Image 1 (cartoon, one colour):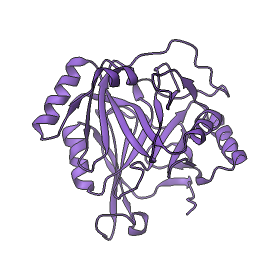
Image 2 (cartoon, one colour):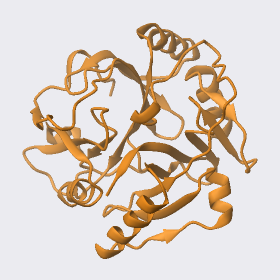
Image 3 (tube, rainbow, N blue to C red):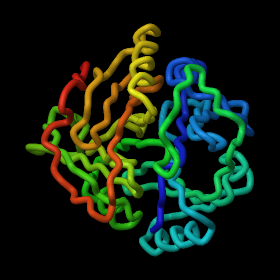
Length: 297
């Protein structure tokens, strides 16, 4: 399967106005036009939108959208999923118009996480005009990364690596106390990091449950100053910082984690590792960070 990148995320929320302030005033994203008045569409580059915040009755991930190159690649993906026994739904015209894409299928992973594969997302050719002059790192690397809860970690890894074709980049052992919602308690649990492109990871698989169906998503900024100013804005707004500034061992990202409305986190980072998929060798990561990233609670 020829998935290229994480294209977009859709998040349902009961805290719609909080998200508007959080995304625009703190993360430095830009409002985009859309078809639904109850959805906040957010731009971070030349795509019509990368994140959609949907007013709803729950706080949850509504979809992670993965991009393929064209209609043929989408048809191939649908056939491969169906051959593997995965129920696939083709999007109707209204859904295509709302997502601003040419083609789209919907399905879930083995742990019930909602996924979409699409092609042909519309571009917005107007200047981005972020509020602080901040710029995001996207392009062929995609939106950034998302970490999903997968209580059955082995089945999930087989699905994403074996069926969807993601490349395993690294794995990390987590102590039992780091995964209190694991399906069964063990001496350690494995968390996996994967990607379909040169970004070190576009997907993290967390071996436990989490009610919102998302652990965190990451957006990458072009400069360290962009990250530092974002951290200042979070502090000034009284947003709880889940993890202090630090540099990760696996993707070398310098980042911090802030609580987002709805029970999960956003990672705001800089200087993520770009890899050569042809020569990459998967490894076990034995520490989360070289320095920093002190977790609060």
